[in-house]
Length: 378
Figure 1 (spheres, rainbow, N blue to C red):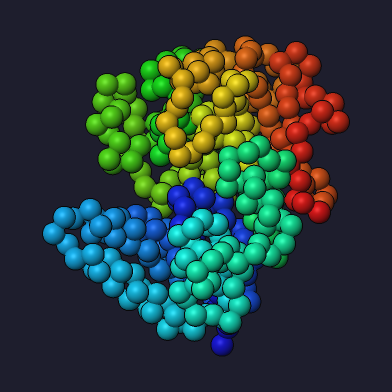
Figure 2 (cartoon, rainbow, N blue to C red):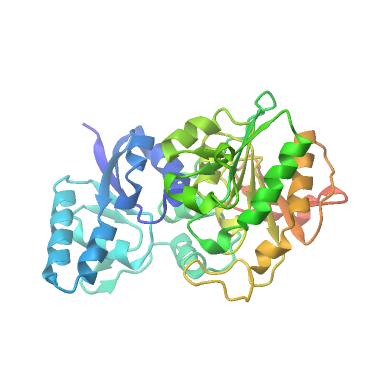
């Protein structure tokens, strides 16, 4: 019988998709269990190789906000969940989340071995290594990082750094998907710009099929910008299969970008607002990332945009995105685009160091010494 490991992942679906290679490295030797927020139950169907447990975050919040509900009811519900989890007799519990809630839960789940941020007997336990300290200082406080999220998380938890795969050549495919919206308004490019981009792409590439991805609950928001025939209404499970047959994905920094990495789909990611490509670019060689030099970006996930207008989105011109798409399509070593857009491509070396290689619109890629390295930490 395999030993059991529980991974606590209480962030967004895209974060879990990024974390998945870490779990896969354990699946051959261990029975892997995962605790995720209950609004992401579709992950159970997307990844049947893992055993999922669901944290009732929304339900607990609704109980707390009900004026006539007993104050003890959320506590009793949470205690019952912790007892259920402890009955699995996990041999190891690993905290992938690194926030206060996950640390408190670590204290309540019985296991002989625990890794990651922990709370015990009324206080936080000391961080376990230098990588965990770096993760706490840089990733928990929205500072810039030279180390990718996946790499530093692996090193902080003594897990192997996942192998990087290259984007596939999809030159025989004809469908290009466009993912416009994210869960963070600051990361969104305006729907008007997406509409104009779609029109220009169709005009220049009539031989391709361009489809805007939409979740069922997003359809009303799209009505003012797109026709019904423009949309591909889909779920995460369906999207993974669709991406396997796509020529390319043009996307904001969201779950779709990380599914593209999982399916080795060529992608162009627009990194705006709180999106930080040095931390959370797709874990894949050959992904393209566009951003701008706006001084306030990347900003914090937890606060609203501090500017009178969405400056980073304003600075990213439709013509610049079109120029980059044309350059990628033509597979040229050098192509132009309009500044102040900044363009990177993800690369790696034999030591599995993932790095963003800057691209200049006049001379192709910068000299190697000027590239922004995202190291594995060792």
